[in-house]
Picture 1: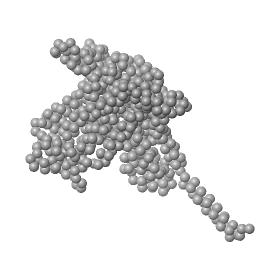
Picture 2 (picture 1 turned 90 degrees about the vertical axis):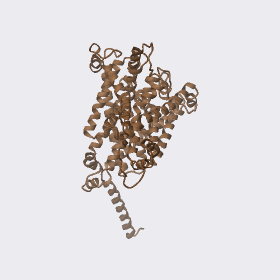
Picture 3 (picture 1 turned 180 degrees about the horizontal axis):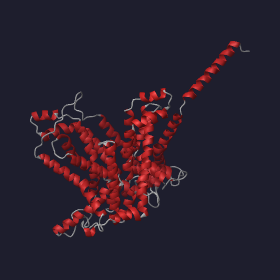
Picture 4 (picture 1 turned 120 degrees about the horizontal axis):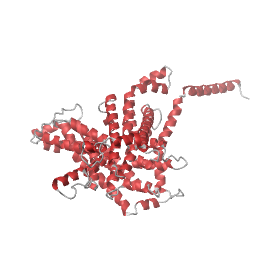
Length: 582
């Protein structure tokens, strides 16, 4: 039999165990359940679509077993291989043209005494506001064979029977994409130039080098890693675009990866082949992003440590006006010319005629806004889906950023990686992954608003997370601990301390997600249903019909809305608000 002392010891052990359990229950917070649910939702939003995409690429038609036949089919025809080869060439050519456009502009703004530098910043902002597919439509109106404004002007002046320009060429596609993508090179390069002192160039000048020689032999080698990093970003942007290759490449019978993927989604649907065909593009993207991170991690553009040297503008004499003319030319080609012809066509009875009172009309805007239910629904869908996706992305990003920065869960770096992973995934592949995961039964979300919102939220989650994480790092955790000492929980601390302090940051992040989501095409084109069409998809469909007056009016609405929200961001968040998401 047990002695009284053993019984007392056993009872003490039980009491200590109960006390420990009660203590754990006492300090268990409802937020812990929320953290688990948020992590599961992050896996659902990001990891699951790509896992399904990989699995589907090996599935037999109907899901009965696995096979390599999808990869054989995807790369057994010369047309499919041509699409991959053309996309790679498109990325390389676009990167080269972007460097030619942006490098002189960045050097002029950062290093020289060129006047009217605001013009360059206006061009960069305008290129961000103007979606690539609208730039393509603008250049169709400008340089379409025979009917384009430039060609009609050429024929009128010279008496030629055919136009001089043809935008429906590989060169035209490269030009249009480069006119939208060169701001990436500009921002990377200018940021690097701002970190390099002019003292080294001045030393080269003392030794006999002129301004151009000093720039070529001293400055460029220092910023070369940043230039290479921007080239990789532009390359990936070019090969992942759908709108421009579809609008200009399909009429010219030039096949690209993105347009070939769109063809696989025609009748009959070949989802398994599309998944297999997208894998090389995904691998190329991952490898190049990894290479870009290695290049930028070297920080080869830093010339010295400690106190930074002075950065005095270089006096380039009369050449400053040549540079200004060059920057003005890029601004006209990238923003002014396509925006003008789109606006002109939207107010014209016939876009091919010159602007005059006889040709002026507002009927296209009236039809879009008040008569055509299809366009009304598309406009409403665009703003509703974008707003819902922005709220979802910001809410999830803030919660995950809180978990990671406060180290509330193990493997926080994995969560941060999942939030940033969609940045390295082309939007078109993301859409195919969502289709593979959630379009078919048992989930069956294809054509629903839910699927569109989820895809948009995943597409722009990296912007929301980068904004939220930067804001979280700026808040001292001691302020939250003070709330907890006074009896509040984690959720109370977030509501009472974190959210008010990050109000401006969260608003900026919301706008940075909302604005691109309103005109997203690459992801929407694969997931849209009859009742969920958005403005970008409707513009693409209408442009195929050749109704450029209505297309231009709908594009004008996008430009007005985007400009308004950019202005709102400037007023409420700050002058650099658009650059925070780049």
